[in-house]
Image (cartoon, rainbow, N blue to C red):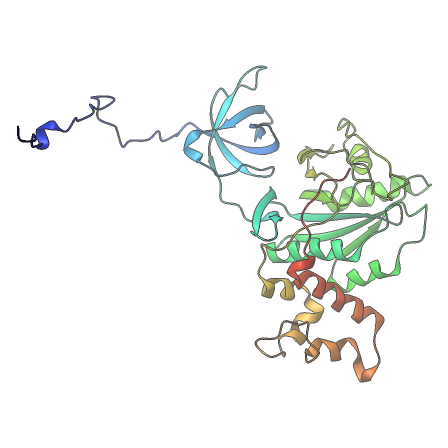
Length: 340
């Protein structure tokens, strides 16, 4: 008996799941309302409309993998009453004018956005306990300058110790510096100056845990109830109190402040090397005279002569150059790590 020959009639055709043709039309969402994202927690976004209604929303499926972060302006449909138990949908995210991002994995250069659409990056450091670190401040400044965000520097606990001299150097980069005390006669005056700095702006506060971010926010926004922590005596590091970014309206409703989790380091691997150099405005003009393939780490680098004019090392310039080189080193670039 000869083997059977097969033809196309033997192929089994799986019937379509539905005989109804798929429509290419998509909802226009013409009735969507605009809102500001003020919090993100486990797949739910807290949003505030222009009328002040607080809405809980989830991302619509059509957004795909696109993330939604605090500071985003979004369009919302569905139940936008803001009633308890109601849930709306975020159907679109407006284009971001800037963002503050960190590198999650230096080897893979995975970038993660923390907040978006901010006017000011307020770097909070303590005069001591924990002591300020030049490298971390410079990382924040690089992010601010490359994104067109105005950086500010707030030094807390000035009544507990002497402010390190190197912090004054940032004034040369047009960075406004404000000193505040925890307990002193000038406390109210300090807070008034800080309020003026934040007024009418969307500002994000960043810094180590234990520097006093939450304390400042509780003073500026009386009903914020942000947890405050102390500093671990054994490690000298602040205890982590904030778990996620959250935007809070100032008590006069003329601005927003965004509190972020305390951090130890801030990865910059996602930023191009040339942009990092350009962020150091006091060094970038000199770096531009280097050879085209200069890594700014070799002995022939023009920056060495800049740091030691007439053969004498200038401590301030040398410190700035050391900070730049540490940021340019992929090996030394650290990732964002929540405080213990």
